Length: 485
Ligand SMILES: Nc1ncnc2c1ncn2[C@@H]1O[C@H](COP(=O)(O)OP(=O)(O)OP(=O)(O)O)[C@@H](O)[C@H]1O
Ligand SMILES: [Mg+2]
Image (cartoon, rainbow, N blue to C red):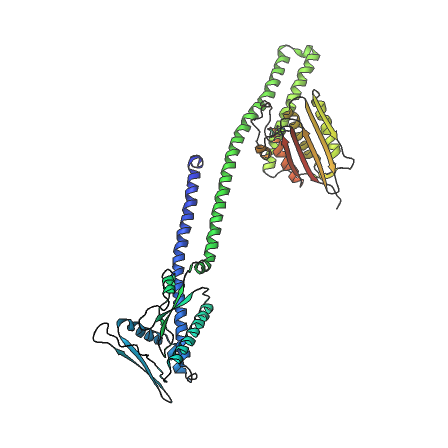
């Protein structure tokens, strides 16, 4: 898997993301076209319905109660018949609709006239189904009235079918098929949707009606909204998944690096005390120091200090194991932080007497927490130890403790070289050590101290942060103050 993660993983993931975006885009485009076709079909159907209702309403006067009459004019077959004749007029065939009404029936006669010579057409004669001898003005009035009704029926059908389109109607001369308004007709040629032609006044057949929608995009997009949202969500989720995968891979790589560095460090750290103890014991036996109690004491002392160091290292590694497995059990009790800090500070002063100044500024208020004394002491030890180790000499360290009713704050401040900004969060990662400190290359450490500190503080429901510049660092611990339940 190593070769995969190192060299091919990034391009592979990039290709996967691009392919999934491309596929989604292609799919959405296809869906867009399909939806557009469907929308056109729905619009045509709405116009069909409007036209049939219009025919029925225009001839229904006096026949409202006749079920057969109504069924006939509202049937798709009537529309088909009518449309067939409307279309035939374009082939130089003229059609005539006539009707005879009895008391109990209505007869509709449709006759066709096919002229002998192509192109020869009789002068316009108004063809009527129900001829009652109207004047031209009445015919025009009726035409306008029926046009309005057609318009309102079309809008009603659109509303009923949730077709939220904005369009206009275009009238064509019924006989010649030529548009009445050339400008509007030219505009309509670029439109997304142009309906079939419908005769809307079956008394007089002056005009045919066409509905035009300039753009269907908004409606189609609105219809596709759920698909669009879900595919966006999918892309977002894929992106996030890849992002987390990358992050995991990166931290895995950093972890492997850090672990290797840790092993190197540890070998060094373990070897030094062992070598010193070995040399001390060797000297005791070789020079028979049993006879020189002063020297013997000195060598035994050195060995003891080194064994203590070894012990500390072993404790750290064991602690890490416990931390990783969630095995650290706190034994919380009422703990006086000031007392704890004071004892750690005095121990450190004793341990590092040369060129070390630790100022401890206690609080006038009591600083009690509900905490584990062993681990919290260890936390203070780690922070002050870092401050001493990384300050260089002479080290000036200030430790403070402040409290209010709810929180207790402890700060450990040094005047050392500081921590570069890009590492300030990472120093709390396990095994992490800043490798490019200019002056403190040789300072030994495992990179576990601050990891342990952060884990312990968060087990105490607290928080640790760092502020650092080239003039020094301040570590601040924030813990909940003790209060009785
Ligand atoms: N006061 C400080 N000033 C400058 N750098 C610091 C300070 N405290 C920590 N660091 C940097 O943060 C790194 C991590 O610190 P941490 O205490 O976790 O590990 P360590 O001191 O290297 O090893 P250990 O504490 O286990 O002996 C250190 O290696 C050091 O580079
Ligand atoms: Mg440390």
